[in-house]
Image (cartoon, rainbow, N blue to C red; front, side, top):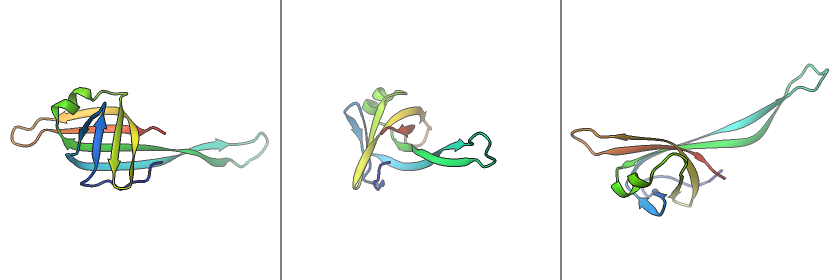
Length: 111
């Protein structure tokens, strides 16, 4: 799993187009578990076999970046101390009448 600090200096890039107008980043991770029950044994063993990480990024719309966003595309996120690559799974865009256009991208960590 990546180890880096996200904040106001976070940058999102897709296909060489970068956007540093990131408003928020939500990172979550969960363990993948495997349950094993050998034949004839009453106990079930649980083993952690890996981790899955997801990220949700909200940023101010950029027409250049918007045109390169597509599900299945790799998105790079960099922050203080490092970064990581993520595969985009969902994209939404809000267009309020009296506020800034925002884009929300959900993605899974790709090792």
